[in-house]
Length: 198
Image 1 (cartoon, rainbow, N blue to C red):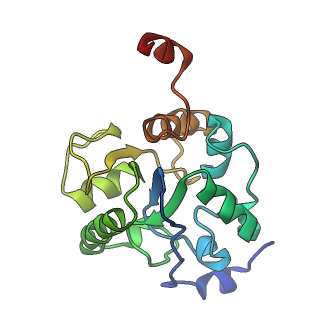
Image 2: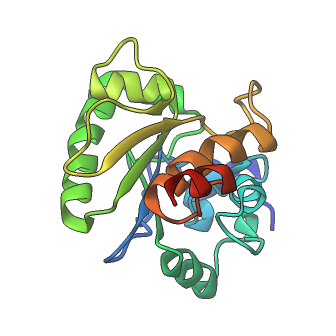
């Protein structure tokens, strides 16, 4: 599936439904939908986005998701069945995340907190340190587990999987995403850690 630039631009300011359900273990939080995501109504859908390949490499999912054509209902049910959901800080599609205002991101934090209260996941992982710092008003936040929880859920910050984030590879993203997935119980702990607990 492909789109012309004119077709993609027609999705500016469109929204994308959250992929959420009861009894979630882990919610991944994007910054906002890109135009391809809005066109396909599938989170992290741009062909250059490494989100689903990183989940597969980490073992968080055990099958490929063809996000560029849009998730099937079977794909959505599979992710939810694994206890994984998706939402965004801001549900307004733009070509680039830097088109969002600081006020939108701060409002997105309130929206996210309400979502977490409603669905009560174990862990929330925000994908994007710069957007997190703005939304949560924490100028020196670092990636990883955050000191404070969010509405009862562990709060993590992980790298943004966008192809524009050239500092990350699928392997580095997989390693970063595995940490909150283990904390949420989606992945088993590493063997050494499991042995220490016995």
